Image (cartoon, rainbow, N blue to C red; front, side, top):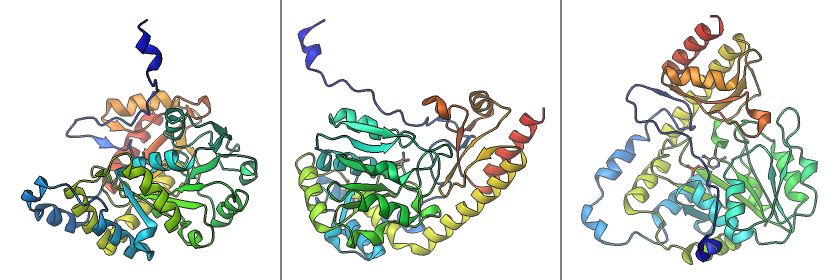
Amino acid sequence: MKNWENNIRKVVPYVPGEQPKKEHMIKLNTNENPYPPAPGVAKAVADVDIDRLRLYPDPVVADLVQGIADFYKVENNQVFVGVGSDDVLAMIFMTFFNAKEPILFPDITYSFYDVWAEMFRIPYERIPLDDEFKIRTEDYKKANGGVIFPNPNAPTGELMTLEQIEQIIQANPDVIVVVDEAYIDFGGESALPLIDKYDNLIVVQTFSKSRSMAGSRIGFAISNPVLIKYLNDVKYSFNSYTMDTITIAAGTAAIKDRAYFEMTRDKIIKTREWTKQELKKLGFVFGDSRSNFIFARHPQVSGEALFEALKEKDIYVRHFSNPARINEYLRISIGTDEQMQEFIDFLKAYINQ
Ligand code: PMP
């Protein structure tokens, strides 16, 4: 072994869902939105003066920050933007999780959290979900260096009430509490109204799901100006220009179109509820997901076998073999009505064969 081997930061990376390059497939594996971005996005991108690409983008991303602040009725200095919420969350881990005590997050949750913790050498503890995959708020009442959880949780889709979230925040006044709301628009109540009440709360959201813009990589955090300033100080010490000129134009147009956002969100919720009914008829077991996916298992069919059988037919869903407790489950993103009908038709034939 060479000496330099000892000095390498060795990490086990996060594994994103597959992005197959097939023309005719039903892609229900990465919680993308099946509908296109708001119509104004195409125009905003077409209108970007290509000559502007000579110049660096706006380092403070003023237009997009303003758009988000307007939408959520907060001040500009309460908004932090980044390259997807992954970038925002990574910056949050780096900025706020520097205690000796472990940060806390659920044992079954977004599988990037432990990757960032390992990467930044942050001690962490995974808190087991209960038997119904729910977060027990009382488990978060112990000494820790910070708390993070998604609401609704991923990949379970389980939603916590605002009262439960408040219990966790109240139990942890001396650390930063982060609520990752990647899926909140699909039927949950956002913790945003709590940011005025608690100075240690950060709410993170994304344009990747409910705003159909996973390919643009836009995420944001909303908190009080003090925490946002700390976050920006770290970000500008790392990379001043994370968001590019075209993305900023696209995101600014997207956030302005509230009607389109609400229409596509409502369609997905409706399709999700229809899919739940059909899955139930077929004997699947699942919780009451409030996200744009359903986390389901079938008592008689192995999760892995079903995953493979679907893939054979170019229907992609997500299967996690780790931890063992979830390896019989499939996470099924909600597509269009037509896609979900095809998915259900396949299941009907497969299960009744
Ligand atoms: N948080 C959760 C819970 C997620 O599932 C995802 C999607 N992979 C993200 C954050 C990151 O999404 P993005 O970087 O596309 O905003």
